[in-house]
Length: 354
Image (cartoon, rainbow, N blue to C red; front, side, top):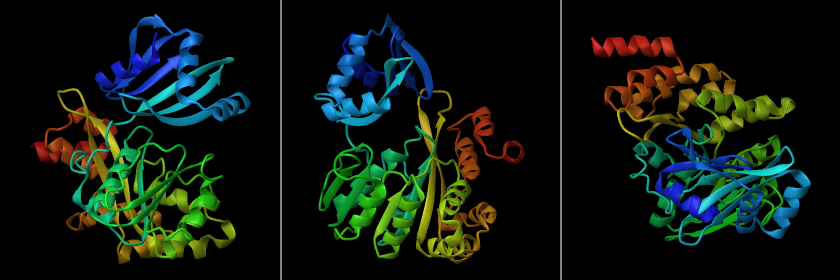
């Protein structure tokens, strides 16, 4: 089978991911659910075709040496795809993430206005988080594209690999790929401070050194945007603080509190009664009380503060889920199963449905 034709039909079917495994049919993930694409099984020549399309000779060598490689490529006439090729049972397999043909606008993604405003900060640290497949990279690309179109800025992205190709608009955008344009995240973030960047987007914060460099870059007056694989604000803050050097943790969490502007967490839920999914967001915007809690390491108190400050644009994940249920966008079953506190969600829903 022709891999480009499979990818074309996967786009037409609204799939988010394509899975290729030798001896098995192609599998598509549509609206979060896996299903087979026909009955024809993949042959090694099909996977070889994918590697020819997606991987350079250097990347193929890395794949042979390490057993896995990430790549992002543009398919002529289609769009851009993110590919992870890996070895299993001595054979190659691949997972392909299908990216939108064009970077959607924040309006098209229904990004809350408080999140759009947060991304317009002139300096500090903004985290945009979510579980794998939640669309956090798409949301971030949307916000960066919006920013570039409205203001003349110097924007540097550091990614592994580069997912969306951003439009410069009024700005200048340098997109740097780990392993091709720079040796590593920490080195690239450190270098950005010498590259006259207004905004630095770090695709992930994989280690202590990168986190420290991100904090230093925000302290130096740049806007730093990055992400973590977490499902709520507390998890993101705990993860950051636990990654700080133990002997400097108290000092660094105080510095983190000063530069942290906000934490956004995105989740996709199945839409009520129809195909498709909707996005809900937990939003924490830093203020005096939240800075005090972060500086003192009292992270477990942050969610309660978010819940108290809805008038300022904040909301908890469970609050966002409840709102989606009240708008009839999701079912009661979805609201309960996706809530962080399921018992409380059941009780809150009873109050609103009496």
